[in-house]
Each structure stands twice: as C-alpha cells, then as structure tokens.
Length: 314
Image 1 (cartoon, helix red, strand yellow):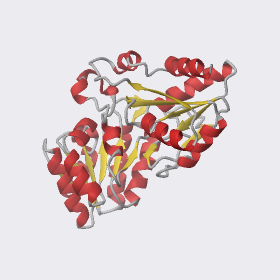
Image 2: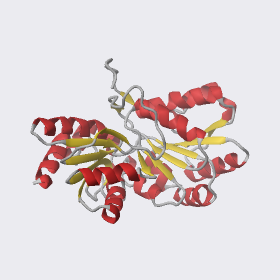
Image 3: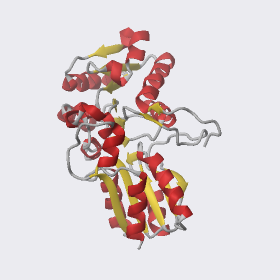
C-alpha cells in the first residue's frame, strides 16, 4: 500500500475520470446515461465528447437497447445510471439484448448499496449483484476503491462481452497497493489466514482489513481477500482459503441472498466444505439515514466482523 496517504474518493468519481481518459484514447468509446450524468459522473465525458454521449432520459430500458445496438456497429458503449434502476427497470433488456446476444456493453452503475443514504429504500440497490450474477454471460465487478475502479474500467473496456460494474456514492479510502492491476476473475489476497479468512468486496474490504488487524492482536490469524470479481469467481483462491482456514466470513454491502456471500457459499459447499458466515443486509429493505448510521444499523461494521469470526471460530 502507498506510504502517501490519499484522501478518500468516491468510486463514481474515479469512473468519470477513467471514462474521460478512455474517450480521449479511443474513438469507439461511447457513453449513455438515464438523465443522471451529474451523479454518475458521465457528464465529464459528455462535456468533452458531446457527439459520443447520449442522454436517454428516464428510460433505462431504451438506454440498454440503444447501447446494444451501438455495440453491434463496433462501438464500446458504457451505460450508466443508479444501480437500482440499471438492474431493476431494464432487467429484460439486459437479459436478452446484452447477455443472450453477448453484446459488448458495459453497465457501470453507481449508488449501489445502502450508502446512498438519505434517499432511502427506493434508491438503495441491495439485490443488484444477485440479479446480474444469475444471468448467463454476464460478468460482475465490485471495486474496493477509486484506484481499483480506474483499473477495472480500463480492463473491461479492453475485453469483449457484457459487464456489470457496481460503484458507490460516498467517498471511500484507498486500500489497494499502488502496483495493483485489476484482472477480471482474479481476487487480491492481502493475507491468507490460517484461522479465518474474510472475503469482501466494495467498501467492506477496508472494514475487513481493520477487523483482521484487531483479530491478529488477539492471536487470531485472519486473512483478507478482495473478491472484486464476483462473477467469474476466483476458484483457485477460494479453494486455498477453504483449505487453509477453519472458517470463512464474507462481507458485502448487499443482501446476504445471492450476492458475494451466496456465491462463495455455493462454491465452498460443492468443492471443500468449511463453515461460511455471511455479513450483509439480512433480507430486508433499507431505510433513510446517514451512510454511517445505516452501516451500523445493518451490522456492516468492523466490530461485527470481529464478533462473527470469534463466535464461529469457537
């Protein structure tokens, strides 16, 4: 990790900057938005490349269909809106025009999870990873910080096929090493633990690292793995984690049903069963509040990770 302390930065801000740089390098990059470009940060791209930016209005289904059409002409479309609208309102179009047809469209959805905050349940995407993960041919990525977001956006632009990248609204600290480079399907192992391994994605990676530090001071060798690609999973790292430790704890800003925890539990149960405990939203809608308040209310905290490891490690 860098010796220089960087100020926390929102992953959506990193996306806006990365998309702009991609646009400067590649004329085949186009951007679409559903009237939220100021929030998704695609407005930076729109200002410099108005001929390659399409504001589709509040019509997410149309946005996805148009993006699919543009991809068939050789363009590489980045379609953006809030995660709850991208995955919920346009699911049928994503299923058929992106996944079934294997079109080269990148959905980069911002405002994922409960840290949307005061906007409340109507704007909090807590099921989006599950929805996207279930679709054949779809790849699902949840970066941990701004640096990983930049690397991931460049990586998905260079590959063929549909991708769902989930970003957040709030500023998050930098956690990834300076020399880190994102590769689809590859997890980053901060440390492989002998007692427990905490597998996290998104904003929960930072909390997992802090929890592991506390656990090590208490004599528990807890590893931390950033599983930023939820589909396809890094099977080799998961298998090593299952074989090397007694329990696995997953941590995500998403429902415990169908997200990172579900994906890990499915793999572990079929390949090398060990105890898996999932930390996330417990099958409920969110509510309105400050991001920090909501994280505490739903148990997405360092203390909850530490408590879970200690309880189930025995």
